[in-house]
Length: 468
Image (cartoon, rainbow, N blue to C red; front, side, top):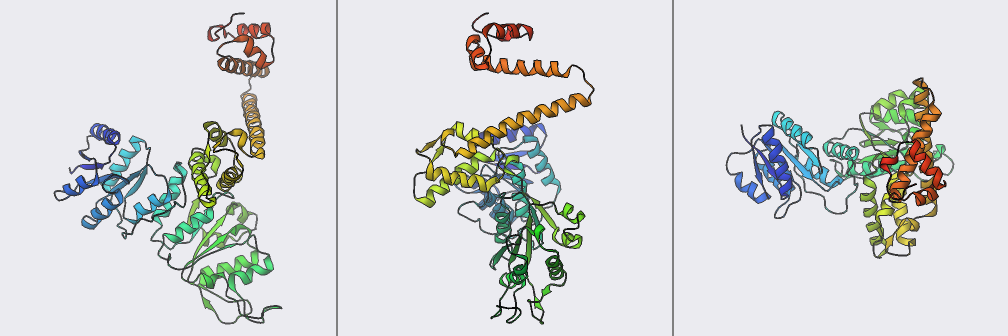
């Protein structure tokens, strides 16, 4: 069996793979840089290559391209600690078998290697890595899935339906799909179907002939014609009026349309990417969205996670937006303290990534110093966090009570009260280093009352410091 090659300048990564592959009885060979691996390619090629994307003396993408030039069917897995869209897209465009973001689960990495050993990958056209500011960032597994999907769609012209809450970046994903598609040299045209009055939307989409209605003094090209050869992004498609849904369906079915007031069919050579924050299946059941149009749009579906589903990305995004705002304004970048950063991760972010970006811009303009603490954040954010935290624990309490009632438990009030008091007292004592008088003051209890409760709850052995 030919070996698996591991290429990474990080000794600890190579060591992890060495141990895991030895355990799995998979032959391997490790390299600390791309040049060593390229030199070894003059001999027998490996069965699978696992390479880091950024290394001194040569990038993993350059290595990938050279490997694919000589051994097109050799599976190459690209690793990276830089969790951005460009890394994923560049890897897939250059023919990578899979994209593995760091840190990764070792068992999953080994499973991926085994899959690469048994599957023949599809070769893809080599293209240069796109440089510059990353379009979309995210460490979270849900965002990595989005990156993978965009990477796999680079040679596709399929219709895509993007689902996601407001502010999750649906248009950014649509632009990325266009930019990394065969239509990238042609226009990307976006229209928010919910933001345009119904009586104007038809003309906006399909254009109109001169004299088609009062005020139509010249012929106007609509968005379909403006996007000819490229991509038309239909945002908030779930709010499209029913009669325009019918016209859109006809375009998707027949590949042609008529301008308002026109009699000559116009050929439509555009890729449709639609987006909505609504559940279109529910809208279909409610009779508010055509089922046949839904199936036309729902060829490939991408779901964008809300920011509260990817809280680990808040710090990554905040640093990025602070740096971006500083560049735009020509000022020194602000830095969030650990406390402020942790505070931001507790928010529910109803406005998602867009809301976080706005806050970072506000901080850049309004915060008095370079180091930004919780007190320097916008007042409405601090107030909302307080309300959210309060609501969260009350909601959790309600769910626990409901579960206990459904289980038919008795003495629920006594049991939950004991658990509540126990948690509060233990946290207060931990906060004060075991000093009971100070803990009693913080809890609003008398010293003797706290001592009695400690005894009743059996906490004597866990409490420290002052006695009695």
